[in-house]
Length: 134
Length: 134
DNA sequence: TTTTAATTTATAATGATTCTAAATAAGTGT
DNA sequence: ACACTTATTTAGAATCATTATAAATTAAAA
Image: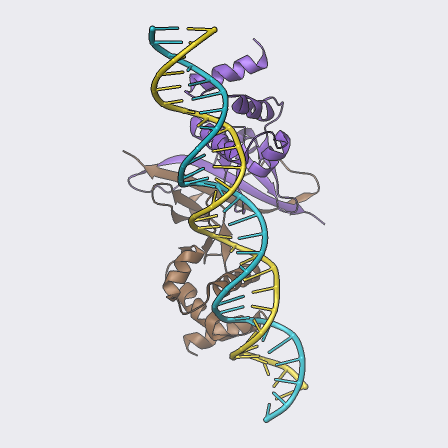
């Protein structure tokens, strides 16, 4: 089974049609050793005008809904996404607007001593903002 | 010293001219018992069309730069601000898009076991996403 | 009071994202 | 292989938050 086939399976198994565009996007996003942090603009540059911007948005939103991508919470004018959908955290380099993974093992378990009645915790996200230390 | 005077002092002491608009905005933001979480849209509703939207943006940005307001990191189409500029964290109710303070004393100290060479940590923010538990 | 620079403002511009609706293509059944 | 149904793609328009512009106003200093 080659790479494309695995993407086709992945797409079909979640009820998405395996279109050429989605497979192309899968290749950019998931054929990687390390996790990929990106904006729509970043992704569109990788795709090099081969795919319409509307489709890129549609696909990223679809993948997010299916749990293949995760949106990262930072205050920015644009959305950042992460191919690492497991539980983990981030450094955000405010000098370069760059994200760096911060694995769970590198953060001592975050313990919340307050609970909100009638609500349950969905996720706990730690964002460590960093800057040049000179 | 009445309230306005204290705002005038506050503004002047940080090199901002004490304009009627800024004093009006100070009253909305800082005459409160509890901290105030808001968007520009929220604030403009409180000000009830008395002040131009451009001025509201300018002022919020100026106050943020001076450290009177803090921007909160959540992935949203708009920016959220907080009148509590001390070190603390947040719950974000995903059902209602509402923010709730999570004081430092209610979070066990977040310990980061990884450091990025040449960078220093500027802030550590914890965002606890919650939803209805039924 | 005069002066100067900061501020306010309406409006235009920008940029990210979503919407629209027509054309295309995937997957299903024959 | 073929037709059918429905999802998807797409260009372009629309929307929404935010910033820029540039002329009029005003605060604060001289």
